[in-house]
Image 1 (cartoon, helix red, strand yellow):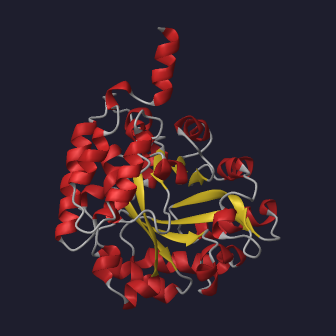
Image 2 (cartoon, helix red, strand yellow; image 1 turned 180 degrees about the vertical axis):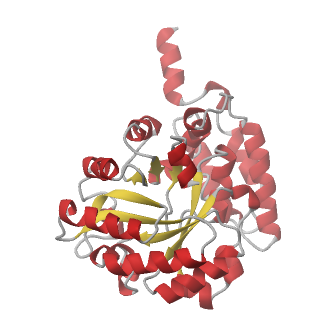
Amino acid sequence: MYASALKDDRKIFAIAPMIDWTDRHCRYFHRQLTGHALLYTEMVVADAIIHGPRERLLSFSPQEHPVALQLGGSDPAKLTEAVRIASDFGYDEINLNVGCPSDRVQSGIFGACLMRTPDLVADCVTAMKRVATVPVTVKCRIGVDEQEPEAVLPDFLARVIAAGADAVWIHARKAWLKGLSPKENREVPPLDYEIVYRMKQQNPDVFIGINGGIGDLDQAAAHLAHMDGVMLGRAAYQNAGLLAEVDGRFFAEPHRETDWTALRDVMMAYADGVVASGGRLNHVTRHMVGLFQGFVGARRYRQILSTESTKPGAGSEVIEVAFAAVDIESGPKQQVEAQLRAG
């Protein structure tokens, strides 16, 4: 995937792995909006895969492809075993998390704190590559705490690339492991896109993608003038409607209007299946709340999904009622206002 992307100068658009957000229901929903974006799982800890409920942790719908599994861990042997187990599930990529700053990740000695031990990360990548049948990649920060990115990031990249990493995704912020919460670590440390651009310039034959603070598709396109790939996180989740434009803009698909009715029907059928298997409607609909950001009726849509989906016995008819609250034909509210001003 990454080698061919480099050879053909083909860019990759990805939706970032986000703990508690990008579960299988979220990914199924996002796939209905974009057929080509690379989707990522939440981070799954290697120990959990080895000792826990593998089917629940790793299973996914075939419609989600291409989809990457993000692993958390720092023990090469355990990561090797986790990759072996995951290979039976058919993921398109295995990604090692070297960027998450949460306390529970630090206590397990993995995530962003691994930026301090590039040799260990390289050992992990080497071990994973020995058994993986798909690309092995790394997602990292530009540094942590007192580290100077200009000093540590080039060396970190050199080591993981030499170990065989097929691609590196860089979140263009440092992580402060003490003093900032995970939420603050996504917002407070200043973004430094230029250093990520320089890392790409210094490694022209290696796929390097960029992540962090990218708010819309215009910004994504601007980054792709410098990088091999771009990864959106919160923007893609909180304003999922923008994903409907991804295939036409970044994958040369012919432009077509989004069939919102078809999307509604697909998600209703999917929700019916989840409920029938013992799940709850809000397991699906919580990921759909941001779909109609900017549309007339979006506020009522959000209210319906947020309140009605959590009630006992709630079924997919809640999705139908919520969609009916949106003036889909008129498009986003700003377009309506522009039309009124013009007319």
